[in-house]
Image: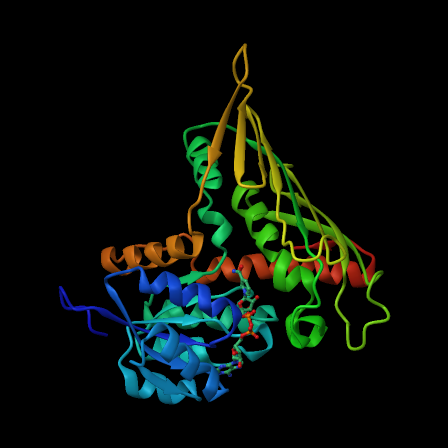
Length: 334
Ligand SMILES: NC(=O)c1ccc[n+]([C@@H]2O[C@H](COP(=O)([O-])OP(=O)(O)OC[C@H]3O[C@@H](n4cnc5c(N)ncnc54)[C@H](O)[C@@H]3O)[C@@H](O)[C@H]2O)c1
């Protein structure tokens, strides 16, 4: 770990696929960082990243054990598909490497708990890629709730897309399903705003993709979750919506305010006064850049990130509860 003042922190990218492009671009905008290593089981993918984002500089690896062994990294951005998580968090933590990790952090609670234990034991910082927490509208809501507005009453989140994605995405044992791999962003925001979930119930099914070979994940889901104190979350998703669009609007209601994200704008209507007024928040913020900056701040200040590994575990626990309910037809106590 090379944290001498003025020295750039050395970053490795593990998994040089789709979302890693967004991480690489965000990392390049942080002057305190240099991307020192690229790792992918397909060497050509890591080489492409090295050429595109490193202008030919940086080391390339096919095996992350070798990368952590040789590179003296400070930070790793883990962009592996859900099925590929193995011991990479454990190995990174043992080398004192701080961790940015994409969601879902694992496909089962036991594996996720081991990751939480590994970062706690090694005292490294971690940030799970629930970047919607960095939306300006969500930050404003958290500010209002912290200032005494509330209690939170309801969160309604939707996730609509229409894409076959990659082959692994369509397979339940590889991705965990649309809720676990994708709608988990909405489950996480729901937790972030409503608190501790107590019970969840779901209907799930494959209605529009039965003729697609090896499509074993759900393409429609409707979930209701009850939170401590009585707040209710409602989460719906489908992969049968508009091709080429990934839409994740939400509505949040607390005593004293009603907020909504639709398109690029969040509106917050303040209802705690005789004449309600509506505040509009428009934002072009790069939320992946923001989550990296937050991790850097936590490293520098020896503080906590907004979304440490334990949050990845808790949101996974909620979404796996929803999946189990969808399979059994029974509510699941959490
Ligand atoms: N935050 C977001 O909005 C967002 C968006 C897309 C994807 N994601 C998440 O990011 C993760 C990756 O998704 P993706 O779409 O980039 O997947 P992808 O398939 O495009 O890329 C994954 C890369 O990891 C590599 N890989 C697989 N196993 C490996 C291993 N053991 N060692 C090294 N490399 C390995 C693959 O070869 C591939 O290049 C998923 O968990 C997904 O849910 C998040």
